[in-house]
Length: 137
Image (cartoon, rainbow, N blue to C red):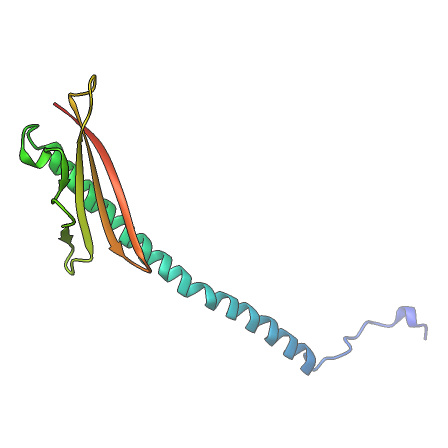
């Protein structure tokens, strides 16, 4: 019988060899370890993002409160509020600290006051965010 007319039969009808199995397990293990290293950094990034969003909310909240304040109110007097190095402690645990700076603009823009609210917190070092608005007389 000619070999060209023989039906093809799989060489190993019993499955994978031990060496193929070991190589497959090593490849899968390396992939799983690489993915496992991403989880802690993703968790830290998510926590940082959550804290940043809360700080931005606290800054925006103060800007909205000050924009509804009368132009001659003491809260809009030039300088840092609260004075010195004091801050407002925010959040249930006081993790965020807020202060704001009011600057009277020079002529010809003397009908404006620049208000910058800064919120600080600690997460893997000192962090802060600032928001600025201009209030018109």
